[in-house]
Image (cartoon, rainbow, N blue to C red; front, side, top):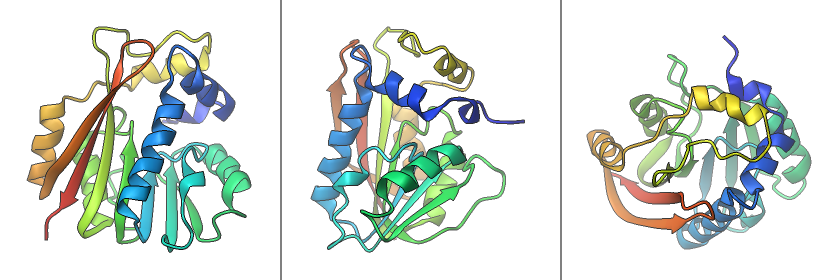
Length: 209
């Protein structure tokens, strides 16, 4: 069955995420910048790269390889147009990480997983991450907290409503417990409030040897 994300045009998704009442596009961009500068990774994987939000913060002098993964090939095509000249070491892969086949792509030392666990089963996601992250590598996970507000904000974009069928809130304690099960240690966390009183929680995990 075709995933609903393949039915949402990138312009609809980005308009929704950038809407004044949502404000997630800018916040995620700023968080990407913050953690790239903090960790200076050599090999990076972005799960759910969409249109490449935040890729402008890649430092080609310190990062040797960037892998962007998404289920929507149209998103990847646009990301290639936007960033292939700026990031020569950019590789874009059309992969469904929820597939029963656990993919092994590359051993990175930094994985960015923002708003992914809401759409992919937690253990399945950690299996993929474990297979593609070096020991002592960093995993940054951002999840949405509704704070009593509807999961899918009303921005006038009809296509985005279809992801409500997939969306599920992620419990912070379950996330941390599952991470520990897969030999990850929580080293830091932060929470940022959004315009609609929702918030994004960001967790930094370190993969044990």
